[in-house]
Length: 192
Image (cartoon, rainbow, N blue to C red):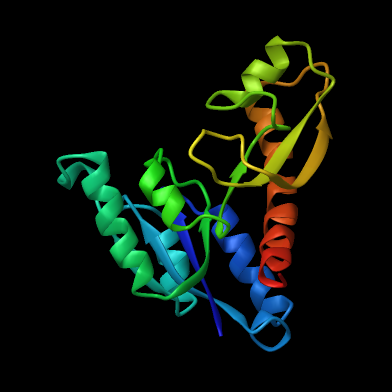
């Protein structure tokens, strides 16, 4: 069985989309894969309750309890490795990972970013797209590399930027596409 470990920091809507798709598309039988665990750096992350309700193992590692980013990432890797991951999925995990952590999971660590990379890496992507006068925005699933938001692109979806869009309305439209392409990209990675 191929194990997926998903990292979250909040509501976990992309994690939930992956779990639901895995169930609906019978990934265990079809792909020999399952979501083995959900790990968060925040004990109050709402996505943890969803994972528990679906019988998925959960763990919390509060990054504030570690003296360095490297110390946190080392313990995070130990927690992840206890689930023997074939794929590590960042789904709203709001931590920049150290190069050593990224190297440990090279080729099997993926992320979703709410822009059409390579445009608008980092934060505040929706407002930046509006401010730049973009006619289109979107979302990208990519492999994680040591450099932020520049890894090989696995999938993208495009949405229009409407004349009266705010960062919130654009974000909501992009999020609907995130829930479509992230499970699809995960399934493709599992088929490799």
